[in-house]
Amino acid sequence: MQYVKRPQEPSEEVTEEIQATVSRILADVEKEGTAAVRRYSGQFDRWSPPSFRVSPETIERAYADMEIEVEKQAQFLIDQVTNFARLQRETLVDFEAETMPGVLLGQKHIPVNSVGAYSPGGHYPLIASAVMGVATAKVAKVPRVLAAAPPRDQGGMHPPQLWAMHRSGADEIFCVGGVQALAGMAFGLEDAEPVDMIVGPGNAYVAEAKRQLFGRVGIDLLAGPTEIMILADDSADPAVVACDLLGQAEHGPTSPAILATTSESVGRETIREVDRWLETWPTAAIAGPAWRDFGAVIICEDDEEMRRVADDIAPEHLEVQTRDPDWFVERLVNYGSLFIGTHATVAYSDKAIGTNHTLPTKQAARYTGGLWVGKFLKTVTTQRCTPEGSLQVAEAAAVVADAELMEGHAISSRLRLNPEYFPDVLEWLDE
Image (cartoon, rainbow, N blue to C red):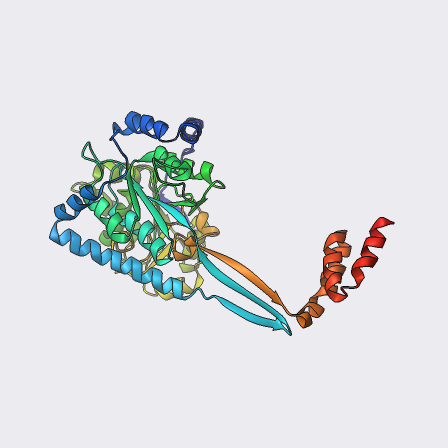
């Protein structure tokens, strides 16, 4: 392979300053509670209302202010995300099966008791992120979902974002952002109890807060700047490829946008099309630097090399715009979400189609998928033994325990073989 356009090496996103700042905020909120949240909210967002909890009256105003067409299409988004999460949930089956006479093993899927769903509001107040976290958790039957997003201005949260949280089923909503929001969800905020799990995207500070809080609470994943990669052959339209690259690059100036192609002409024409798009692109101030610094065009010898390059990069979003996309579908293994064919664009997943858009970045797709209904469920196991079943396994357990020098385990196992063995055990222990 060869680079027609090579990206610069990414700098370390989580600096010592970010780590120290996040650590200080978390420690202060854990110690001081809402007072620390208020102090940092005032410092970073100039936002210190009497209560961070969004009132019913504010929610009613958000409903009243929703434009009819926005409400219609946002409801479509909620319906699609909810439906896909339900289809996923139906694949997760509780069962109990007899694996040998008298031995019954099973599994259950138990919802997490409480979840904090964060939705960012920096450059963009993300309506869809609110839906991805809240609606999916409610399909999993999480009893309590606390949603939070930062203020857009001194009027509070962006009304359509607030509408989406409430419409998706959030039980509690707080207008607070950044690390202080995650800290409040983890340690408790005003009269809201701490949550058991925190999900949702955010900037480098938010991602670092999730990393430091993991263990105290569960998290979905650690997400960095969003990524797009497109695989294309000579059947692809460079203008469409360029449009999709820039569409995802508008997330932020450090968002990688990568094209791998078997056609050098498609690669070079895509670069020219990106330049043409940027002349009128509405978010060129963000997408332009992302493409300049982190855009890449890679020329591959054949489809197999494109496949290898894609699996090595393990991108968050992977579009396949080739004559035979199914060839890649059967062979690709490392991606957050796969978009098959010219008409499947990342924008659909981000905003409307129903699959969750909270996905792994920075090659994490090598070992995990993205947020889905199963993330909100604990898969636990059960064991049931009859006396007959105990006879099937007791000696095996005892012998393995003996070999491990775990004599207590061996005793527990052999007692099931012969309850009268117990006095002999005590005598043996006395010796």
